[in-house]
Length: 518
Ligand SMILES: Cc1cc2nc3c(=O)[nH]c(=O)nc-3n(C[C@H](O)[C@H](O)[C@H](O)COP(=O)(O)OP(=O)(O)OC[C@H]3O[C@@H](n4cnc5c(N)ncnc54)[C@H](O)[C@@H]3O)c2cc1C
Image 1 (cartoon, rainbow, N blue to C red):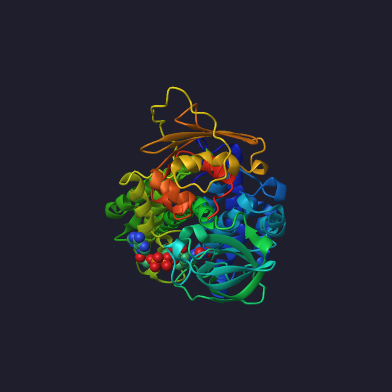
Image 2 (image 1 turned 60 degrees about the vertical axis):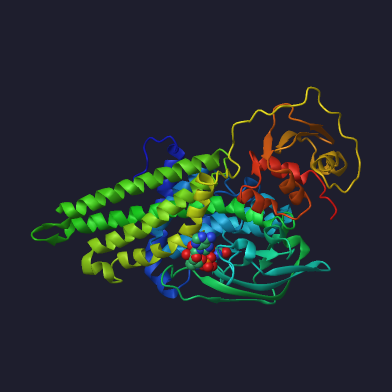
């Protein structure tokens, strides 16, 4: 697409950066596309070049060499990335630069950031994210790769499949079960160096994305230090879900970029190819189909931009990311098919660009969550009313005339909702609440509670008091199950059993208390 001269989303800096990214793809990557596709490999040197250009650290923190740039720099880059003319290269770079290291960036220790994030930003180390397994693709919670503590180490056993960068990566971010009985609430993310004994991988032979190494991986008694755990133990599913929304926006954006290029190539061909004494671009039957495609691509692009704007403003945008991914990846498949048709027989031969576009577009509706799963997420929002953490209007509840007294500290094993809330002050972890001031409202059908944290102090009151930073709505039963570990918070949130107006505040809130001893 032409660089937008005036846009509500992009400024002059974005436009200049977009030009740089486009030139880079056209001059330093695309000329090698045929060779890298044939070799089924991306040379290491180009990763380092991209690191030098700052492309691999757009979403990385400045403290570790990243740009910490606003979302629209990433969007501009992702739209230009398909000008590499390889779906495989586009996927490899997206996974490495925008997905695989996100959990390290957001939840990793400084040591993990120094060892893995910083060299990923420079392009010295290559990353893969290993979630899918032979028996667990769409159903992430069903994964079985296990990590068990043994002294100072985790011992990892299991198998992963469909892993982008899986063969040539220097490290894998591996989703493992660390509590096999806790479903989604028993998943952790652990970093594994690929030269650790017991890691083996082999490349899958795919119909497209040839330059990308998509791997099957086995972990057999792989020992990694306990410090390679990212963030909290058993919080991996939440971290994965946080990454998924941006991953889906990234996939949508690269789909739009590849539609742009396919349409450009096709239009150029149609202006020179003649039939019945005139360029085929003059046939109304074809030009109207082109007009439709240009229109649909533009509409999908604007949805991507709007979704990016939501991300930029801290809105989880789970629905919009899924809508953008669904629309753009399905569109990209159709655009590749239509464009190939307009090339006639030349569309079917490898010397022309459409065959690769066609092959590469096909997998777009499978990776990063299938179209069926995208529809399911959208239906959860639109049909079931699940809000996935969107800000909502505050509901007015009847508060008692006088606030109940501050709860007395009492270490009890809570079995009822009042006991649960009254136990909070005794479970506060002051080391986690330094400088924190927040107020959360809990609304249940039969009761309501206000919990305030002010540094090392925690106050619990029955009823709703003051302006909350977050509102949690659920039933008493579900909340007790959550606190007792019988229900996973992530699944309860995903399925709408618990509604949380501000998940970030709630995460911080949850971290502020010791869990109930089970
Ligand atoms: C080239 C490539 C690269 C990939 N890269 C990575 C990577 O880097 N890391 C990684 O972890 N994974 C990666 N994946 C895996 C990808 O995310 C999965 O393929 C995808 O999530 C689907 O899982 P599955 O293949 O097991 O299909 P399944 O989950 O078995 O689904 C099979 C079919 O059933 C449908 N289906 C499943 N559940 C439902 C439902 N509830 N409702 C309706 N329909 C449903 C699906 O939509 C699909 O059509 C990659 C895959 C490919 C092909």
